[in-house]
Length: 429
Ligand code: GDP
Ligand code: IMO
Ligand code: MG
Image 1 (cartoon, protein in one colour):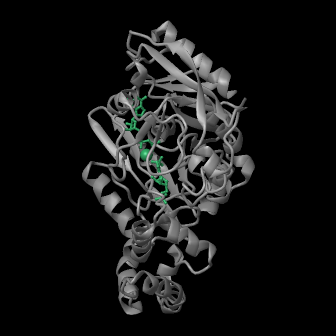
Image 2 (tube, rainbow, N blue to C red):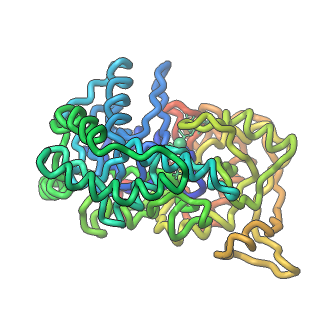
């Protein structure tokens, strides 16, 4: 039996939360390894809906949950989320949740800088304005405040001074008020006792779990096309979202990440700016958005919609390190007369079978479509392969063939139980 790493294989919101929750039933531990509260993972269990941003989706099934060192953590937002799920009946105590002491903190100044940049820029990224990019910049710039610093009040003033030496210059440039060191220190000292009980060591937790033969589920946020290296740069997030990041962002061997499951929507969506070759700005795109309820979990923004792009997913399976996929939201395609799949791009008279790295070229691609016959019967709520209409099976098989990766799971509604297992991802191949 292997561990499993789940990542998004398109532009995010593929249904990772639903699948992690479903898989966590058979795991001992769930670990986030990158991103922050830019993520919005939805889990539907009967009449209850949980929207998680920082908390690993394992909390819903009461599984030990780790926020790894690769995550950037807004401590105020984390406490709010714990209170919110607490009100919904989930108790998240330090017995359940461990926050890596070497994770970097998202501070109010990061959120403000994120918003200032977006507002000032003529080429917006369309970020979630959660301060994710500015925090990762400070991490790499070696001036971030880390969770462990909250336990050492004597060292905080010096760390704040170093951080503000950088930020106040930027803020002056934007015409924003400078941050007062004393005020920030007060904020951090206030939150410190609330965060301290959750602090622990991600790598030691995982080492002990591995030695005890426990099964670990790694929960990716965002997706490969938003990866800082492999995504549609600069319209990306500021972390590596590929499977390899699970090792670095949690403190385990790359060999411990196990089977990599890419989550793939049966069509394509994107929220925020940037190239999107199969985007449909017509009634079909509207229909996909309506049927799929495509509004952002975090920001409520309308998601852009288009047909399935097999070129992109074939590529993200390679760059992301995907062994098999989960195809979600198949039910959203119910009732379409015909369904298109992008199988190649045309650019300046040439046919391409990959996404070029240059954003200007990405924006000029014309998709080449293959058209498949739709199905009239519903797939919504199907729980076995046998319940799927013949044309839906043809669609799934064609997707599999085009992307060069097997379909391990299928999802046919937001509900946990409406999931079809084709191949158990926990079983070593
Ligand atoms: P994540 O960020 O990858 O976890 O995905 P989000 O939660 O942001 O967005 C996925 C949305 O699709 C959520 O509202 C889910 O409840 C919903 N969803 C997940 N799987 C399915 C499915 O198979 N069918 C339908 N109709 N909705 C789904
Ligand atoms: P989950 O985990 C979809 C997008 C933003 C923006 C870009 C950069 O729910 O799939 P950021 O705030 O990260 O600097 O924004 O990335 N983005 C997401 N899109 N799903 C997400 O997470 C996303 N997290 C960030 O919309 O285009
Ligand atoms: Mg989401």
